Length: 371
Image 1 (spheres, rainbow, N blue to C red):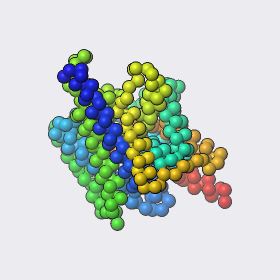
Image 2: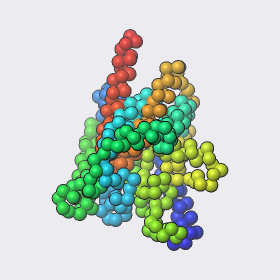
Image 3: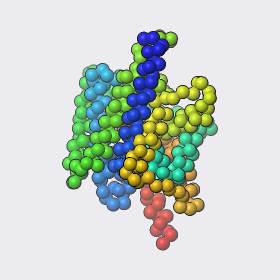
Image 4: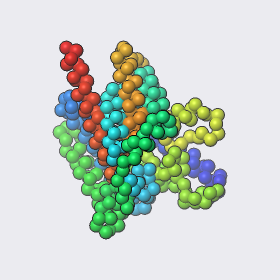
């Protein structure tokens, strides 16, 4: 491959990631696909509809990733979620902080981007503060705290810390086989659970669940297959084009928001280039804005008062710190990471849900005290 060909492929990868992110933003805006909303509906109303949307998306993502891995379209060992270290404490602490913060901030990272596209000025503030907190936890003061505390606690395995590789090591069989079996079994069970819900099979729910799940799968293909170059013409090393981690990535919205702010602030620095994560952030906002304008739901939204400002600022900080510590958000770990059946991702997802439930209970307690 020539350098000119590499440049053209780089453009193709970024264009594909942007287009898929635009669709993601449009679907999320239209269907109200939201993790915080799903947890809220269950806790406050006992309504599992949006949680089934989430389960459907997760099942589709699991099945899609398993099929691609089994056919060699993507290598599970070369994804950002593949590691011999099970960082369970980082996932637990970070996920809990993120889950609590997303309730205070009225939505997770992806929902914040969607709300920005829909005209929410307070979500724009959340985005900026979350990005700063995330960057500090990647490379700044809270990064030192993270590395010297929770990241020190891990379980090291002789193989990758995800269910297919751990099962393959225990049973002495090929991880591709266990990955396909587990992916189809767990993903199929989630899809079946979602589709058999009372009155679930309606257009909005199906578009939300199937559409978001399919986009996660497509993003894996773009990053892990289309963007994979076995031998870079200059370094002669294998490379995954445009990713910040240098490995295959799909969707996530905490660290990429930090990288987006970095790209904007240091735009004149030629070392700061568009990446997979940055175009994903921009694409979600653009897709949400287009859908909001088309459906005439675009509305300017501001803070309701001092307490509203304080809650959103606190929530943004918790999401930025927690999302990086947990190595992902509701999308980055809850869909993208879990689709690889990563052990760390399952802990992070459970902690995010637990943190959100705790935040809702806190809000209910606050309201009861005010009465």
